[in-house]
Amino acid sequence: MIPRIGLLLGDPNGIGPELVATLLADGIDQQLYQLIVIGDRRVYQDFGEKTVGSNTELPVIQNIEKIELDGHPVLLDVPNVNLTELKPGQVSAHAGKATLETLGLAVDLAMGGKLDGLCFAPLNKESLSLGGNIHGDDMNLFADLLGWTGSCGEVNVLDNLWTSRVTSHVPLAKVTTSITKKTVISSIELMHATLVGTGYTHPQIAVAAINPHAGEGGLFGFEEIEVIRPAIEEVQSQGINVDGPWPADTVFVRALSKEYDAVVTMYHDQGQIAMKLLGFDRGVTILAGLPIPITTPAHGTAFDIAGKGIAKVEALKKALKIVRRMVAKYSINGPLTN
Image 1 (cartoon, rainbow, N blue to C red):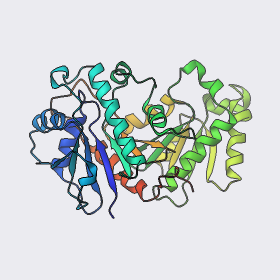
Image 2 (tube, rainbow, N blue to C red):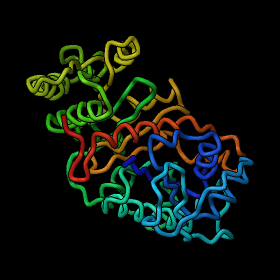
Image 3 (tube, rainbow, N blue to C red):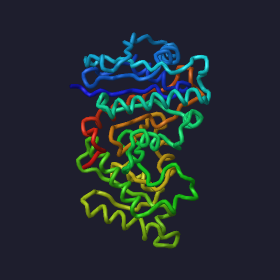
Image 4 (cartoon, rainbow, N blue to C red):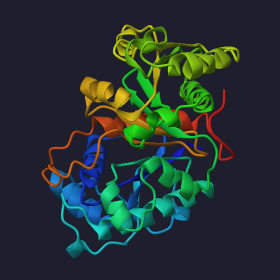
């Protein structure tokens, strides 16, 4: 049986619907997986196809049990929006509430064995919050929907360069107190497992320092000596190919020269600035460590261009490709392991 992947429209006021319409208009390899678009049919048609000028004649279903697994994409209609309350490019409690409902449905289908993986178009944190979401980011939202309390975190992918971070959506003032030997070890192990789970056999991982010049032997801080280096050494003892800590201003030079497959950074912007400079509209985010494979474009809802039909679809295509690779390594019983 070919894998069944759910593709969610994302925030209806963002570029998600038009990205999905463009992706389907460009065509997918129907022999590789069964794609089920999940969302309100009217949003897909009015904010997606009409915006980009496509007409894929996507079959609409009301019940996932009725799908014929022939590889032809279908749309699972979730009629939960009032079109008069939507407007491309605007934050909306109505859009946020509908998006939360659709996410919950998709997760339930996956946990019930009806879907093998999920890929979602960009979400808007403010709209989700207004719609009732109590979590600060996508990672924690999905972990809650899945009832997952194990190790998990965002992994970003740009072409052949992978990054993750020890701390994520926390104030900069709290970063150093959030970096412990345990969290560094967990982040390295998660990155390794994710790489193995997408086809790498012997991934090479670099770890970034937090202080200038990697602390310069304690002149500019002791985190490298007391926390990061001991964590690296412990993970090395498990047979994982990892080293560092490397100064954050040179570690990506090493990675781009193919010395490493991945970089584990200490905080959000340390890695994200590098990745988005290298390819803002091509990056993919993996919600790694969860019981089902989930990916999304690394960019946001782009409210400034929503509804104009000019959004680039490359990141969504790459996110779909990666989740398909992950499906082969996952089971519904747990996250990626090596």
